[in-house]
Length: 56
Image 1 (cartoon, rainbow, N blue to C red):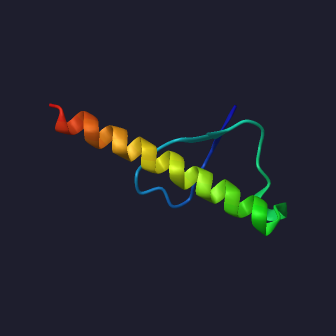
Image 2 (image 1 turned 45 degrees about the vertical axis):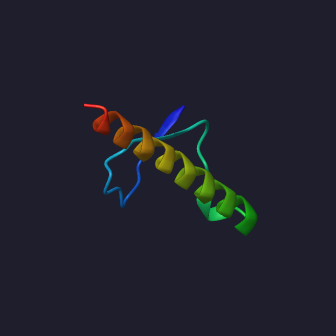
C-alpha cells in the first residue's frame, strides 16, 4: 500500500492505494470510478467522525 499525496487536501486526511494509480493514463470511465470511490470513502469517514463527535 502506498500513500498518495493530494495537492488540495483541506481535510488533511491521508489517501492510500494498493499500487500506484496512473491518473494521467486512465480512461474517462476509470477516472470517474476512481474519483467517485474516493468521494464515497471520504463521505463515510466524515460521517463517522461526526457521529463520534456527537456522542461526546
